[in-house]
Length: 183
Image (tube, rainbow, N blue to C red):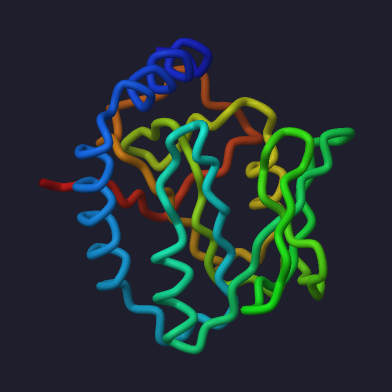
């Protein structure tokens, strides 16, 4: 299937998940993340949850990595050119919702893409080759193309990867791993 069709299907599948299913799936995902070897990792980029889209709650992940003395990085979106700028998320960082309802840091120090060691990537569905379908604006592909080659890219999803996305292109960046509920 092509991205546009997959986007429509998996947005609906996510909306159809019950609160109980989401809680169970998240527990499973969190345990997989907590088992990752992050000993060499310092700066971890993670997306802040968009509740209206029933995204995975990343707060427990952020808390876990903070307890491991890792630095958390989050982004601000620029919808004029579909790019992200990155900032440290400290305990005292204020967040505000942008006009699209996306939480963003207000008073934070900036971070270069080349300083990031690990990126947790939001997605609707991925395939077995690590390619993903997001919301269709290309923010993360632009961002990931500017990261170091050794930067780890991990997708977080409620659904198991499908066999293949039919219309992957040269701008798509493959993930190193997709974490999803195995049970």
